[in-house]
Length: 588
Image (tube, rainbow, N blue to C red; front, side, top):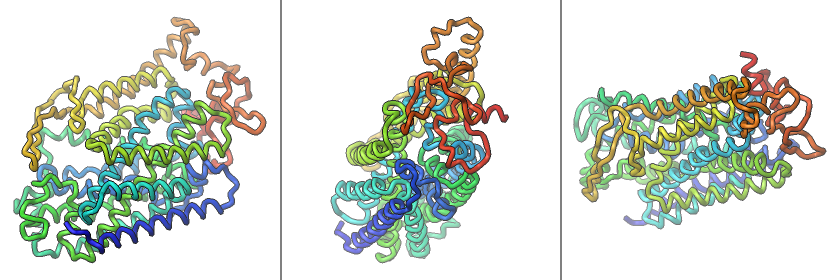
């Protein structure tokens, strides 16, 4: 494959455009003069993200390189088709559910990160445990995005892919480091425009290529492969439902989502932005679906790609750049691929920022350095942005199973963090003991089901399991693995939720009834928490000019709840509503 000068020029133009927008947004943020904490401006954009930019950045929560490439891949794959391309509807419904039930209570209480309510109710230790799956999800998602970027660039130009991935990561890290959420939000606007224009300009040319059959015919009839509409076999219905619930509900408890929710100028705005983003997810998936259908309707022997179809070369995951490269005129192809490459690069920034925000606030500040100055927190964020970005880049280059790692970590977010979020926001009376029990139950039940992508064998065989084989077309190797057709992921999530509630009420009864002595409440989750004379151990109290974590500080309760002052900046509250989990429960 020769080096395509036009392709390199297109990539450079789009990269420079995104870098320029990121730096401009950082400059705009620096000169906004709002007088607030710089660390909070980096994490949540000063909570003044408007409707236009907010709508785009909320849509970009999930619409990025992985979303558009993955949707096209599943529509193209013969054994799956549109019926199994669940991401568009799954993530759209995720944003709807998030807007209806989660956005308002989170935003109205003035939280800064998704982990704030967990540390507020369950303490800093539990917050640290919940940080682990949240961090894994963000880092592996960034690594998967950068890995996909390397594959996309390999279609355009025959250059050192590792170097191109490193340069892409450095650009994203740089503008995120200097501009925080402002840079992420404004580059998201450019990112979505790039995807929308790049793909929609390419689709008509690909459809009119002589090698492409009528996609309305190939949707239902076998021409070059199975119909691209796909179908769900009766034995796979529970598996399909399990995966759909994973996307719909597991797409909520991510810092990349709540980062946008908490940056909205009001709780109502946060809800509106979620609904707009749900519509945006569906709209942005249309060209990807069409490109996947075009790939399934193409006689590849008539193209410059070669006689074998991408599925026979184990290149189904690159069907989108392959269609743009081989079915469109060169100038259209390079415009589309350059736009998509820049968009893929840009979509790694928010995950890196999310991970660094949670570490700087919930681990460094609230768990170890409660008296840390705002300047210190900013520098911790900058260091961790670079460290997490470098870690994601290294994984993308060195780890062959990065997608398997992301699949497993996203499952852990679903089965561990989602039931914890339900409990902390909507169930009165849960405590740290229940949270730990739910964490352990969810982790064991999910890991027990195995993970084929990581070659992790199961030690729990759920009803309906079968042995499947996967053939690698290039090498001819046959790989056998266990497929769990039982919806064990959703079952694990429900078991984690029920364990949290059951163990919380059980320990509460045992301690308050005197069955267990108060001295055995080693987590201070029941006895200390409900004392009328003192506030919880995690109460932040004012001490001169610093905010510190006071151990059993005898202070007067405010805002109608024992922990209201812990994480709430009352100046940013702009909607009426509950200010803490306890107050919220009492209103119900």
